[in-house]
Image 1 (tube, one colour):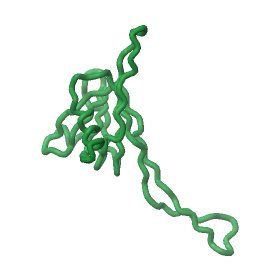
Image 2 (tube, helix red, strand yellow; image 1 turned 180 degrees about the vertical axis):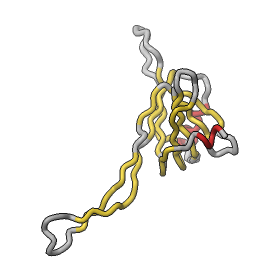
Image 3 (spheres, helix red, strand yellow; image 1 turned 120 degrees about the horizontal axis):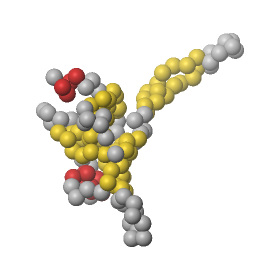
Image 4 (cartoon, helix red, strand yellow; image 1 turned 135 degrees about the vertical axis):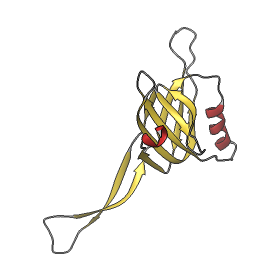
Length: 142
């Protein structure tokens, strides 16, 4: 299980639970420098990090909070939020966490509806953000 927490308050508050999460990814871009007269290598220097969008999936919920976050962007009122993504084990104990900064709910996908199938109705929220880093779980527990 994945928990999305609002880390903008004094005590992080659980916003939603999800069954799937993808996009926990950061990549260091590099710059290459081809030094004149040095033909056996290209110098590589670190540049900046880029981050994938976080994609969260869950069964459809009656709670409109995440849909309203996306709706604010659609209405031209971007609502940037910091958040925590916490992975929990089967006993609902935290086992890993990541913090994202200045997230925007850039995409909401409602469920595929088909009356001839009995599958679960899944909704998806995609969050673009400016930074992602591992989060020390000790900061939540103590």
